[in-house]
Length: 218
Ligand SMILES: *Cc1c(COP(=O)(O)O)cnc(C)c1O
Image (cartoon, protein in one colour):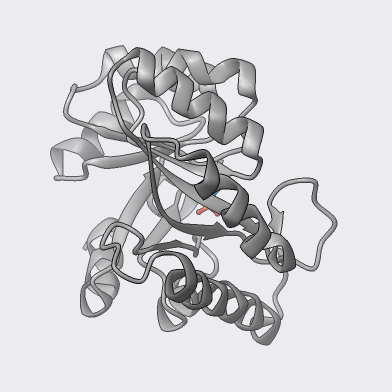
């Protein structure tokens, strides 16, 4: 059985969805997975996404999962379905502005810094409430704020990974209760990659972002 199908079986009891991370992979391999029924694909670079999209079926749901520079939002705003990596107010405003130009609403997730590793990206977990207060005050009507995204530390220490995913889930529950109590759209927790998606599912993931396990090593 192909690995994608095995992963879909793992996701099913949790009602979670698979983002097939196709970065660095050729069009033919992406099309093959599309033909098996996969519809959500994730890329982490704007240029690669923009190059690939016209070569593939138009009903693919493209997710931008990697760090996004403000000046590149305009290249993807007319088609991108979800941006997982929003970690600044300035970026959120730019996505809103570009979405408005195309008369669209773009789904976003707020990337939260949960890893122990030093990284520039992501909103520190203790800043999340303040960030949301500021974001919601802006009333950006071309954004749909749908949840949180996080990446665990790159380590073999499963308990560490679990702890970080639990932190993201707790952050999600807290934010949902304070800011989106009656808001059905705030429902996604994007966590889990090839090496840690099973732990992520146990800790409440709704979107797993898996590349190498289904497409082969990069
Ligand atoms: C590459 C990437 C993934 C997928 O990683 P794999 O280990 O290949 O499954 C998930 N999320 C982000 C943000 C990535 O850049």
